[in-house]
Image (cartoon, rainbow, N blue to C red; front, side, top):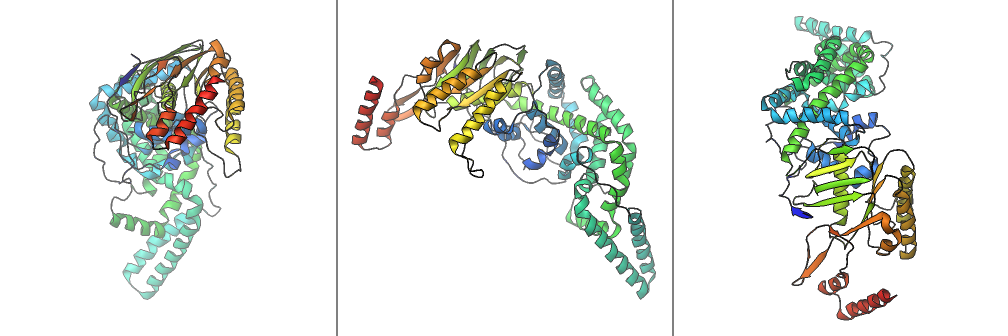
Length: 537
């Protein structure tokens, strides 16, 4: 079956900000309706990104921020950051993906297990949790030279309050003086240390969640719980320091106000830094391991829910290097009512033609998304997916680079050149291009497109390209297969079925659309005469 309608999908929409009180339980399989600070979510990935990760252009071209929001059913900010990174970091071996699939399937099977994991993760909903990577990936500042004075000043504030309670104007003046000094110290150091102090405030939440998750008794989670038990033991001292010097977090305005004044008077955050930073420095590796393991469990829980909400999904069959991709019922998961299509290329690449709005770009974009999800979440929006491990690179959305003064065509040239350079590298690629070189005249566009596409199609690389340039069909020859999308005009209306068909598009509805949209009859007739003349040449 070449095309089939899939029921409507429900997409996640940005909504209300985070609240500290316990969140209501969302329906299993439904997207989470929350606000997302994408810059802060991306902080962990930005710090650990590797050369094989999805590049920024491909991420934007495939609308991956929107797909992340759709797939994100995490319970913690830690899980949210880890999930964002997972979507950026395709695997190149089957073993990690099979282990991930076993974990996700177990989460999907056992509601008691899901509830136990949710309960453990609940305290990590605090937004400051997204600063935690600063502790093990960022540069930690040295303790101030006079760090020993900070606990002394805190004790002085306690003593001044005790003396002031006993009475006497002089005692009150001492309290005011000590408070003024401490407020000055807090103001001076707070801005310098905020990137460390903020995660210290939630460090106890992370170590506490790790300790609770370590107690989960389930064979499918054995590797993760063993790692968390070891990590919790190594971080016990850091857990105690975080507990002594920080509060668990205010849940109402009164407590928040009380904490703010206590923090200024007793230098709570500054002292947390003084006592905690050296412990953090000694245990950065263990802290990172705990962060990533906790986040992995949350991301697996999220992926299980994402699978449950998809109208159709499969786990991929990933093969060794070969110029072969076979997809059954592949669709774009961001569409409310997507149409599924089948695709098979074997030894050749694919060129797709058809009019605007017929579905060319959506199809090649959805296929690229499927390839990416196969190697990240091991979850394909398709009935079946069989393909090698592919490094996905795209050239779909293009704009003038106004800030650097680059024209549309020059910016496109640089983007296409990066694909040509990537084709010369070792890994097998899936190149996905929409309307190649549309920023220049027809003759040069076709000539340049032919040369570039032949280079990209070299070796075992697979290329999916959409175009209006039918001249390419003859120039590219037998190394390519041709497919098309078709539209029809019925009863004065343009209609699409979004089904991929063999061969090339043969319809000429563009001129008919001129008439349907109200152009003068003389203009339409002139266009038809010109089209006939051009076709005759």
